[in-house]
Length: 497
Image (tube, rainbow, N blue to C red; front, side, top):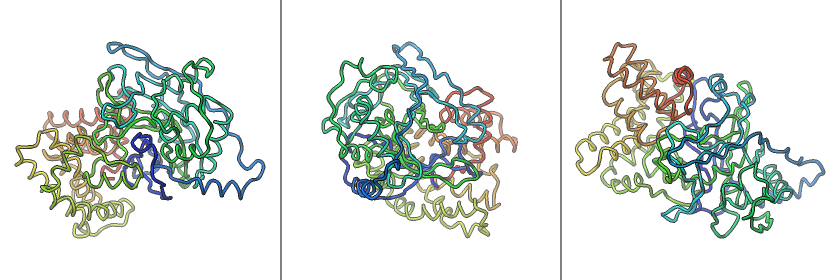
């Protein structure tokens, strides 16, 4: 399972996506050697189905009681924070540190009331549609949003039960219909809904700006195709993964970037959006729909496979495309060897010992390609330091794969990784896509190894601070003792996948 992020679904450039085939690409937020869930350790991907499968299923199974009505959704508290640029907004009033430290059992997740920080829905300036924007300055690790699912179903391969839940809710509640219709895929025109429509403490009868929305099952299917998440979660360590499909409302407005400023964390069913960098007021909040530690052409393929309907045009993607001719001798062989290198690492994780480095052919070749990229960047005067960091992050698999595979096969110890190039790579990964478990795991391993081998005190402190800072961007602001324990837990993660 690869550490790929799911699409938030509702980029308005794909509000009318082409019909999507059934597929089961699973994108995980992180993978541990122990198994179970940690960080966002559920496997979620874009949920694809079509109206024909739903109609056929309903026709064949039209039996009373087959589809129970959904139970009322839990909304114990709502904190819609308000404030100006100089004020600090209130934090969510729940503590989920024990849940994180105990292995993130899905069944024992704490109750997470909905929370909305200083956010608003606005039109993007570059005509990409709508997005979530900050209305105040926020710091890395701040919780921006806590969203419980609008609807959620398990063991529902064609999303039929999920469809029934959503149709039942929208038939019974005008507010639920208005909420669903505000997402991409329902209305033909792009409307910026007020945030109050998503506040459970605001009765719909008090919502003066409501519009007449017509119930349309065809549009519901289109909205589900555009915005739903699907994948697998492990409800208990002793049970096999359980398929799940769901719809989260406000997170669906978050657009994609290959240099995101926010990350996702699941606490049971609740989706938390964390600021992974300091964000100024009136800046769009973005996440990554793809594995942004891959070269641009591989990221483009992932967006196409997920049916997002667009290619990213962020500054990083534009830069990498402009350099594709220069990196042609690296890009294609890197893509050709990538999956084989992943298989080599997982064969080691599963205990199928590869005898000697000769059996790690793909990992070694990727490492060589990473070296070529590094040398090209060192000799280039036309690329800024930050841009060089973006490109190094794109080929980070080349370094991490060989180091981790050789460690598992007994050919080297983590202490042999502690060098200038490794520290530079950690900083590049952290700068490019902050708030990633992979970066946290790798930086923690380096910090621990530097301390064990008695490295320079300044280097040890530098690596320790890098790991602690990344832990805050992954898990949010926790008590210091909790952060240190989470850093220790990250040693069980695989920093390569």
